Image 1 (cartoon, rainbow, N blue to C red):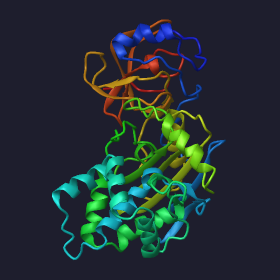
Image 2 (image 1 turned 180 degrees about the horizontal axis):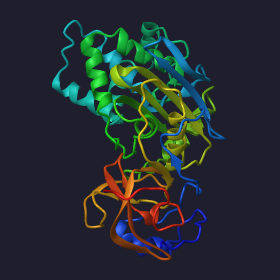
Image 3 (image 1 turned 30 degrees about the vertical axis):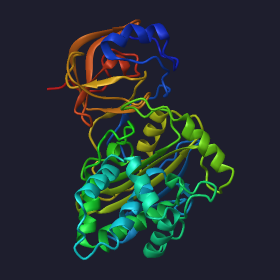
Length: 389
């Protein structure tokens, strides 16, 4: 019989972290997510915006030509990396009819679209007119809520104002109006988005976690301290955002997390979910909340993954290729994030006093294993989860 463990109070003691650091490389830190009940990934629910979260939502079904979801669709948010699609479109706009792109530029475009490389975005922003680039794309695509960054911070492309409705319009242009070479280049890279972005942030939240492929996605994040795949302290950026917010009508202070893209066969549905979270919200918490929100939406053509969602605890927790600490590291988890568990199997026993377990959860979306010690439930063996074959 599995033994019950005491309920965690949301923090990891330094001695606890040091005890497991050698085996699991757990950095001392606090759990960002209070304990919650497991969630069936396939359960249908009405769209729900978590308390304290501001959301702009637009979901467009291309098959019927109608919106299935609209919530604050015209509310402006700072774009973060979502604006990179417009940077690419501006670069490609006048390169027809052959749309021949030099190899160096192809590499730069790939890094910006697949791994959200900020240096590539800054290159195009500085060489193609900065705010004038946004003005051009607003005119070309007929956008109504998009605007350049505030005059006080003209070089900050991530401060471009966007709306969920305009984001859908950008994707609809790509899918239905753009020349085939442009469509294939941009969407080809967005379908191959990497889990770990160039700045070390895990960008498989929202669409990528809530739905099975096929999907394409361009995500955005701003204001967080650390994003999972690697630690990345960003206090300097947050200070700039607070300063710029005083001179702008857009919230540049609250943590921003956006999930945009297409879902389903033949890119049936365009999804744009833009969110702001209370200042200080941990990345793993925002990641989990946005994924739950996206998963609750009416998205025609979407396939939801099978399994059960569980909260995790700890910081720097590793997902491994097999149920043992000497197997390869797949990635690290954002602190306190929720994970989808498909099954569980016995493996190496892990002791993190007062917790221990020889059961490991298989995470299908990572194709890797997580010791049940860091799944935030009191049992050694996860309730309601089948054994792996």
